[in-house]
Image 1 (cartoon, rainbow, N blue to C red):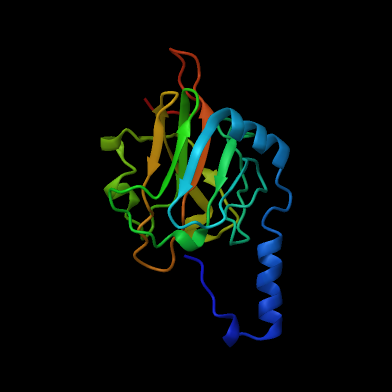
Image 2: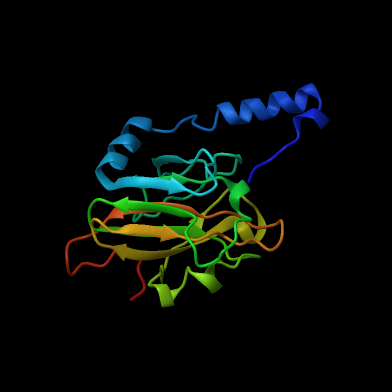
Length: 198
């Protein structure tokens, strides 16, 4: 979890942290996100109890509630869709076969997970074809440099009324990140989500 010891930091550091925590919602299109959330999502639970936020995916949107990083591109399959802004401080949560994030989809939906596999265990444990997570053809650009400048994407179909259960990231070193979740109403039967690799 995201932790800091304010007693050991100066006034400037404390003020900076407070400003960070108060602007995490800046620019979030809350009305549209609330509408989409009410239409698509129910019984949302995060094991860490961090202040996750439902927002709308678009270029320039924050990736995390506790970091300034942004998404720099918005592929058609994700643009304008309901997105869970996670806490990067939760990246060390174990990627075991137990639930870290869960929610119920109220209608047939495709759930996308945006992630970078560097120093994580999520692909080995739960985010893989064995559990129904298919790799997408597109990637998503970020404001981060180097190998983390792009996020890979996997998706899985969930029928309406079912519970989506996602594991932890299982970071094994400091230089890794938490994932992002995007929920999209499923296309009509027979159609394939944009960018999907059969």
